[in-house]
Structures are given as C-alpha cells and as structure tokens.
Length: 305
Length: 305
Image 1 (cartoon, each protein chain N blue to C red):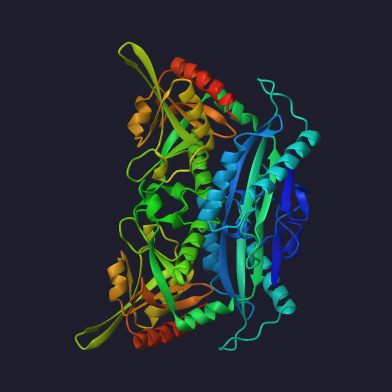
Image 2 (spheres, rainbow over the protein chains, first blue to last red):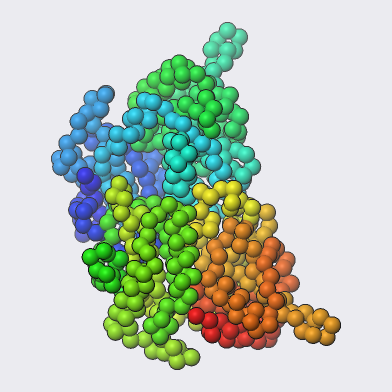
C-alpha cells in the first residue's frame, strides 16, 4: 500500500489522501513536462534518515528550477504524518536488524499550467524486497555513456545536472537497457571518459594498500563538480568512514579505476550499499574482499542518521 | 478551458473527463519519473492537421521507451471526441483566415508503478494568443549548449534523443533562462558545435542566391541524425516548398550558417512558422526579406494537411 500526504495550507500536518484515487490534475506540469523535483529517503522506526540533507538538496534542486516549494517545517510535519499513517495502516515486520523501514518520497511539481501554484506531496510505501536481495547478492552493472562532458555542468545551468528533477525518462531507459542485456544496473560515464553516477545512485570504490607495513583503506567517489547529484548517503558514509580511519578521495574517476579497485558499490538512500560484482561482464575485485568491506561499511552506514 | 478525453477500453470514443478534477494517480510514473511521451498538434475547423505524422512519431517514441500505447484508431476517435467537445463547450472565434483552431495534445505515460497499464489521454485547449503575436513580431533567440555531441544519438539509444518524452524539465529550464535574459526562445547547439533544434520547435533557414541570372531559394534544416526530433511541420513545409520550386537541404548547420542566412525560423505544430529577428542579440538577415519569405512560406504551410 501507499500513503499520500499533500502539503496543503489548510492542513498544517498535511492532508492525507487515498493513493488509489486520482489526486493530480492531468494538466499539472509535473505530468505534462516532468517539471518538478523529488527526494527519496528511508524512515527507520518512524524517523526519517538524513532528513536535513534531503531537504537541503531539495531546496537546491528547487532553486535550479526556479520553483517555489514549501518550507522545511511543512515538509517535516507531512513526513511525520505519512510515516505514522503508513505504520498504523500497514504494520511492517522488522528487518534483520530489528528495524522497521519505510520509503518516504517527497515530490514537488510546478502545478497546472498558468496557475503558478506548486503541487507538493509526501508518499510513504514499503521497501521493495528486491533491494535487500541486491545488497546481499551484489549487482551486475553496465557502463553507459550519459552523453554529457564532465565539465559542462557549470557552463550550462539549464541542463539541471545537479538537480533531482522528475524528468527521469533517460534514467529509466538506461535501467531498461541494462535489464534487457542481463544486467541489474548502470554506471554512467561522461563523453570525456569519466565515471559519473548510477541512474538512481552514487558510485563508490575502495582501494586497499600497504604503506610501510601499515594497511591503508581509501574510499573514493567521483568529484561532485562533474555534473552528478551529490549523494546524501555517500556523504553520510564518507563522514562515518573518515571517523573509522578510512582515507577519502574525490575523482576524477575513470573506468579503469573501477576495474582496478578492490571493491565498487552503488549507494543510495533506499537500497543503501549494494556491491558491484561485475562491470560490462568483467569481475571487479574478489568476492571475499568485497564481502568483508561491504559488511564493514554497511555497519558504519547503519550508525549514521 | 481544457477538455480531457481518456483512452479507456470501456469507452470506444474515449471517456470525457473534467479537467478541473484530479484524473491522474499520484503514483503514475508520468508524474514520478516523467516516464511517458506526448504529441501536440493543431485541429483546424475540427480536423487534426498532419495527424498521421504525429501518430507515426508517437509510435516511434513509444518504441524508444518500450511503452505500449493504444492503436491509431483509438487515438483518432478520442481526438474527434475532444475536438467536438471543446468546440461545443467553448466556441472559438475564427482566426485571420476564417479558421477555428484548437490545440490537441496526446499523452501516454507508463501508468502506476507495478501496474503495467499505460495511462493515455487527449487534451483539447485554446491556442495561446502569444503564439500569433510571435509569428507576427518575430523572436529574439539565444544559442544554448544542449550538452550532447551531434553523433551520440545512435550510439546511445537510452538517451532517447529522437523521442518526444514527458521529461521536458531541461527544455523548460532553457526557455526560462532565455526569458530571464530578455529573449523569447532558444536554439540548442551540440557539444561539437552544430545547430540542433529549439526546446519546442525545429530550426529552418533560407539562403537566397543567383545562379546564372536565375534566382535560387534554398530551405535548410539540421540533419535528422544529429539527435533531434524529426519535425512534422518542418516535414510538411519541406514537401510544399519543394513543389513550389525551393531547393531543400539538410545540415550539418553551424551557428555561422544562421548568422549568414537570409532568414531563420522556428517552426512547430502550434506556433507554426515564427521568424527569428535576432540570435544572441545579433540581427539575422533583413526585416523586409524575412517578412516576404515568412509570408511566402506561411502561405505554403497553410495549404498542407
């Protein structure tokens, strides 16, 4: 089941709506133009994780699109209403750590043509079981060209490269392309040969080394100024990994860096840390190192908020 | 006012719906992912123009997105219902040629997540008065980088470059960028310096020459394999212009070709042929030639179906 809570000035905590009843005008520019923004986050035991990072990123996306959206307090009250309504209507069993998890999605569109009124709502739903399976078993991934040069983001703000917009048809087409070629997911590369991000995730890689007898562990992600979305989960894991003694690095990352890494992951707010087994059919690292590092980093991630 | 007609197996001629009442589920992937396709066309005196070209292009877009859509007959019946309902509910005055015009939009989305059922509808509405004004007065246009290389379309079908998808956030952001810089519209260029298309239009240019005393008129548009949408109105005008003795040419077109042209236009199904007065603040051609050629080509276009 899905719970909807619309942000509506007449309802300070949000207006709960039936998800099986049409709630959006067919003329809404979210529908007719993909003209809007979104965020997806996990609520654990009723508490939304990294909620400020998601609200901050949504505010940045809104500025990129010159879109007025409700303030953080209004979103937070609607998120609470959605999580509580979902929990009471559809009690979830706990996961392997004894936690109950809910997917929370925040959406804001430009509203109906000419009306100059944002449509905004929060959606609460169950975590798809496939995601735990992908965390457990790992992913086969294809490298696909995203078409953009890694330097274009600042030159061409109208391309909205740092914004999380509703115009995700290309991301969805890339995933369908991967599935139809026997893969699970995609890592986008830039026209100038840099590793960017997944269609719905950030890319991470680990390099293990020995420095004068002392083991060194490095965690690397593509540089954020290459036109990718700053990952909230990548950011949280980086902070936790630094505390735990990992060295951190930002790209540029090239495909050969992925193939030479000790482990590669796709990381996002709902699926969390999913290890990559193969890229373009070629094994990445070894299963035992991948498994050990995934367990170590997943434990660090579980401690973040 | 706006008339909605949903394509619904229970209603062979389409199901008329109130456009002021929500008709789309908030979980529809047209809303949450911009995952769908559309066409816009003009109905003149109740008859949709170039309807087969639009239905053919919509079918190609659907194949690009691996989307099941209703067959042409079902769309045609819904278009008739929408045009007739709009005409009786909101009688339009005739235009300067004595015709009544209606904007018809066809939309199909991937439907709600997991439901595997396309949502499809036809929308009928009035022609915005601004468009006739732009045809009359002409446009100030900015060249903006679309970020893609002109050769990428075939290498990377997941970029959906030849499909008319609902993911139009970038097109809308480019138009907002132009408006905030005092311009009316945009001509996109590729990363490798070719002229592509407008956010909602095709680009045309005219070159006048003298060949051994005989006047030669050439009409040129960017080559269709550069990752642009094949324009139905450009196609119809090209056919009519050829009959009338124009030579036709396909690109590559570079920005300098626009600045050296005798006239440049943006052409699309609703606004039709809109002359470009300036590009990046620089005048294009001369007002008298532009005006004469616009009148000549508009008359040819009016005779197409």
